[in-house]
Amino acid sequence: MALNTDKNLKLYFSIKEVAEQVGVTESNLRFWEKEIPSLKPKTTGNNVRQYTAEDIENIKTVYNLVKVRGFKIAAAKKMLSANKEGVDKNARVMEGLIKVREELKDLKKHLDSLV
Figure 1 (spheres, helix red, strand yellow):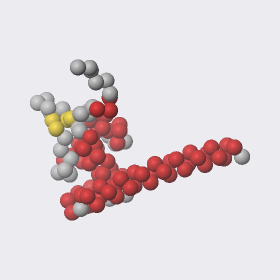
Figure 2 (cartoon, rainbow, N blue to C red):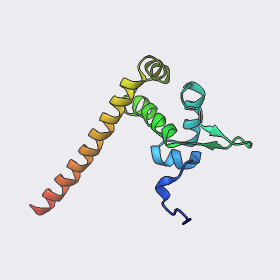
Figure 3 (tube, rainbow, N blue to C red):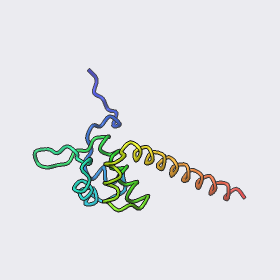
């Protein structure tokens, strides 16, 4: 049996990796975990957090509510408990729109340099 060297198949991520990926501090992630019940990563015997891809998606949803849309943590918690599917869908749409905006900015810079 061959060793799988594909890094995209990583099952667990550290709090540092997740913080860098999402763009928040580690202490921010710990605070969100205390305040929002759906953010509960697996922990080892030494209380080391291990985040799955699903945990990261949940964190990105909270990030969208709190950092992008400007909701207070209590309002984000309430929205997640009332309509998680709708909030997830909106977060994915916002993430896509932000990527499109960045691509358009890059295209504009490129076009401006040609003129």
